[in-house]
Figure 1: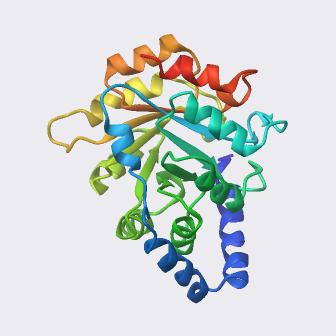
Figure 2: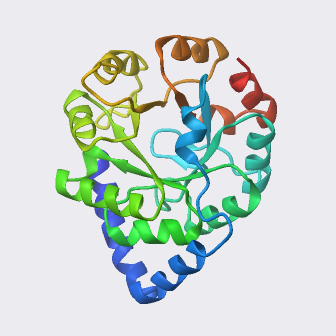
Length: 266
């Protein structure tokens, strides 16, 4: 069974409920209000494209594979520790049923830190792109496995029009080809198998050469899932990976700031 399918179905149902609660016309007023602020979008892509390996530190309360992860720390405490620990950006899981997140977490993250903020959710509808911007996201996640090519391209364009970056997530070579054809500026390689939820970190090193060929424009490459140790950071950097997204390992640490600093020190 593909674990993604029921989550995506639930996401579509949730979008329909949110449209009823906040009609698109009201949402567009929120979008316009943010666009007029002094710093409407923080530079997510630039934060990851800088020399060396960048860490996207993720706030995640629970997951389908790990269950409850950390509930004794407030979101602001965690994100403050990430910022002091040297993270280049933060990722906020806003999906509720499986991960315990919410849009309010995204709004709170925007207020809590000065780092670029990624909204990590199952984005399947243009409405979510606009609500992400309105709630404070500087970047969104689009999962190739969850979208048709046409929908992926449409959502990617909608986010780009608002000035947001897009992390296009792939799990295998066919999905990677879709991301490359799209011209994705940021490609995330998720090492977790969607059917078994097992993690194989070799996936990043297997797919990376397909991205780093002269025929393709240079994309920022982010590795996701399965990394937690400084020596792994060194291996990723040596291979030419630009960044790594880490959540569970940091969230479980007794000293979140120190754990983050150990991974960002190069």
